[in-house]
Amino acid sequence: MAGATVFGAGAAGTAIAIHLARTGSQVTLWGSRFDTRVLEAIEAERRHPALSEPIPETVRVLGPDDLKQAAADVDVAVMGANSAGARSLATMVVPALDDVPIVVSLAKGLEPGTGLRTSEVYTETFPDSPVVALSGPSLAPEVAEGLLTAVAMASDDADALATVAERFRAPSFLVDTTDDVVGVEVCGVAKNVAAIAAGVLEGSGQQREQTMKNALSALFTRAAHEIAALAEALGGRRETAYGLAGIGDLLVTSLGGRNRLYGEAIGLGADPASTLADMTERGLTVEGADSARDVYELTRRTGVTMPIHEAVHRVVHEGAPTTTILEAIR
Image (cartoon, rainbow, N blue to C red; front, side, top):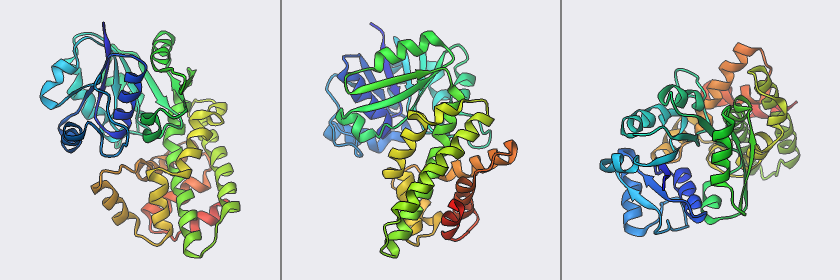
């Protein structure tokens, strides 16, 4: 029986592998040479270092030298790379595949240099495969633990979308489907930037021993409208931004996660560049930092006004003071 292989043993990919195993699917988790430390931890403890939930014995874990084995008899290929590593991972995987699988993208960001959405990257590198984008509020630790999660899946291939949705659905894993790939992916890019802004406000408030809850609520609301306007300008639908892919993911990312923590550190007075370097060294990818630049470029191209997202760009990349975030809400 054909099964699913998760290519890339990051926290998100590993959590999805655990989830799929829980549904009864035949699952393989493959780690590349970039996952060496993770694979060592899995071998020693049967657990990803960033997740508390152990990997079920039913999940076959393979390393860099076993790519051909991992790619054999696969009908769903889950790509666990972030947006910066998507093309690199796909280029490794493509030659090992004998059949054409459905490709599922977990990344939330644009490809550096090209500005392509991740589904577009996979469409280029897997030209014969339908691509499904998985997005929405799905923190890896909670997915791994089997806590109630609802996600958005998008594809312009209705059959592939239905197949993947059915494979992933479970009592604790709800799936909304849409053909609005642009809207879903744009939301996934922009919400990380807005979450940095939320973190900056939170950190600034902590520094002054203030809660800033009113300001955070205003920021959240205005950021959601900015994301909806950008999605529409790029060919997506506004309502997508008011669903799981937009407001849902923006909420969970603003409450926690790496982008919000990064913003919080900046709000407490840390230098954006050195903080980003430190988090990257610890294996914490802050996609919102690059996405702030990407969204800023999109505002220039589309003419969409996004004061909060533009303020994050100024703080992270231009050395503007953190008060810029607060001023953008007014």
